Image (cartoon, rainbow, N blue to C red; front, side, top):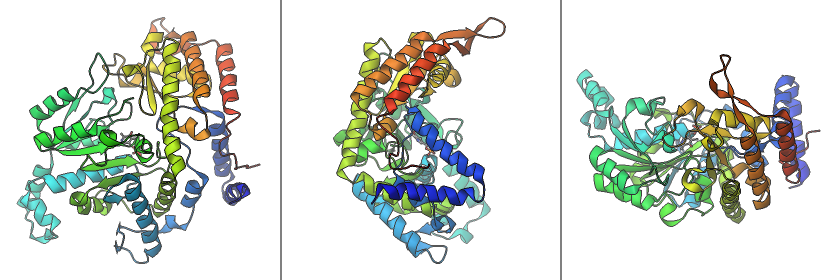
Length: 478
Ligand SMILES: *Cc1c(COP(=O)(O)O)cnc(C)c1O
């Protein structure tokens, strides 16, 4: 394929859009320019390949395909069947899973599918069995009442939000926290690491139906073999949400005890984070849960997005190539170089380092809140996000942490030297920023003071770091 093909494709697409609503075409072009210019350290973001992006912009978007491959509620789905089957096959081969369900529209939706599958499989409810056996007309009002009562209030044990767990693992702002009776396990205050003995103790006391592992802000590996043993010891279903680190599993950086697929009953993920595919979700499981998982649409999902499934097939095919394993290893090498660079300059890191794609800086060491640090970095051309640290004194809004991740910059090609330079820039901004005061002179958790000359100089250096690593080098929109 000629490099020219990519430019031509995107340029032509924009020309067509411009003919209808030029402001949308301009915004799309501006987004590329912004992404090219920013030092993107958001741990959950990446840059999908042109092939992945282009596979999404077509008439598959027009098709309804409720149901699963070969069992659709709509006619004329043969081409959707082709791409869905391909995406599922690539996913099974890539992760060594016996079943893959590639319809979820996002990570949250993948978790809802998994929760439904586990409830439907595990909850002892005669009414539910009748409903599942398609004897819905035999159910009385009393049966339906019993079904709702039996499905509700089931127990879930997941990682606490401030230790790095995710909202969907049973926390109040999410539906999972309203459906489930939830308890959480945290990390050891001294080391910041998961204490498996404490998880086992919590499981013994609480007897959850579902034990969830997975995180969005924990900078270490999780031993899934031990977690499965804990789940088995209390009869829980073990679910792993690998949304953040799926790319490291795909690239065989996480193997053995650290690969969730052989250990979990069910694994969910996003496809757009370290896995570098289109925005979407996916569920992997063994044969026991496969039928329930395949009921995801229309049980909890709307019609699948066939254009996104096409893009998932492309991205998963890319992830099966040997160079993806190199990419995954470089993500971790870069995160470690970044962590080392920060530590050497005196930063405090949660758990003292990283063995995955992310680093969590405790910015209270710089006298700042996460909110102040995030904004000061943004003023200096460095895009990160604030995040709670364990037992965060500043709560979930202001926070005391900055989460940074390397999947995106690694895709651009930056390496250890640039990571050390990035650590220097981050340290410079954080050490030169001071907390501001509110209108009444009281200390503020949001306001801060940073000399604009420092922000400008760091911004310039950040831009210089990116110059040798152009984003989408083959795409020229001019
Ligand atoms: C990002 C994330 C999700 C949610 O993904 P969406 O695609 O935004 O719905 C779920 N679980 C974890 C652990 C995540 O990090």
